[in-house]
Image (cartoon, helix red, strand yellow):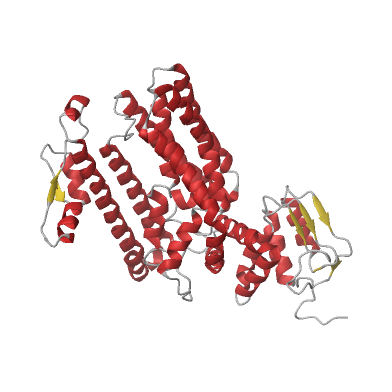
Length: 481
């Protein structure tokens, strides 16, 4: 369907496709029949547009977007399900080593930044072109076919990610719904940051095409602010993880747990709702849309009514923020165990950005003690994942492991063994946020490793080692004196 639609645009002949809406209507009324819809002229001029039925254009192109998205989801799911099995059976020697596929937080950050600015550039160029050709509308924004082209490009990017994931994954499996979930956050209105980027770019374009100089200035400021606020947000791990699901969602899709967690469709839907009402998401909404909202009020007062501006710059973000604030606590309680599972999956995949973002959410709900107890229990049979617990605990500016510090539920001091200290030291080397660390009254086997971690860490400013003891390691082939 997608291939036929694309190829038809290069030819002067009209293209017909099944009219899903009319077919559904006729079926609903008990008359099953095949109905076809003919494509309108592609990118007509303003004069040609007057002769066309605007409802027919919207009717056709919205369905074209639906067919394109459905095709992409089916193709992406097939790549992630069948492609991995084929690659394992026939091209096992091409699978990169675990070392080659190890996740690096800074590389993840840079990847998200690059993809965002590519998206930002495409949206800005598209809007500027539409403005220059007098195609940008106060009612619908871009031409319907331009929306379809942008969606097709976005779907193609999702499929590229799926292909790269299959080529670079070692021994992971993915659920059947993994591509669908990632595609919702990568393309869906209200879910995808690329949608917010496009609507903000369009608002700037509407201001720029105005004859009023003050609105032109607001348009330029809007475009600049959109880039600058993302640059600021990219400095913080939790926001990088938020944008990662939008711009690289397929590439960093969570793998299927080795043990089935019996996650239901309802829980999957609940998690999708939860991601839209987290405090991180609401802060992004505030920071991205506050300036745009103020600008839109000025635009409406100076330029007059615009359904597009009212909808996308005022009503949509305000509704998202209010609903997210109201339902957050209720939804968070429902998905607590699912969040712990997501944290465990991120740790298994060594996705540091996801580890930090999921840990921060759980700590906000359960506190450091609750987080530590929950994750120590989950990772007790897999000590190699203990690093993730310390990545989470060290997200704040202060971590107290002294006699008055981290406590268990019964009030006793949290037990921290040699493995814990070893993992803490490893995480400390690259920790971006911790400022104060109290290890008083603790036993450390190797002060030299701690000293090296402190040498590599340039953020820590206060370390308490009062009454901390070093215990020398006794080689296995030696006996104590």
